[in-house]
Length: 73
Image (cartoon, rainbow, N blue to C red; front, side):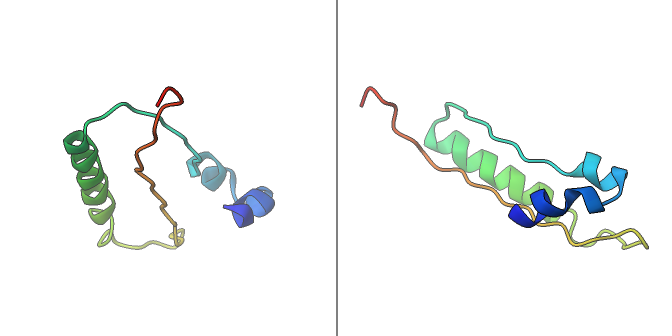
């Protein structure tokens, strides 16, 4: 991520629009969290065999789905 932040200006406008840094906080049960992770993995895996073209680049996807205790606990 640090490399991207330092080099983003060198990439095309299309790549700059396509990049994403997001942070979401959800309230889920363990089963819902497991379902979400499985669905995200399925989606990412569905892109593994997409045909490459001349503008294909390696794209890194990072996910974290970790429970967090509330401040009240």
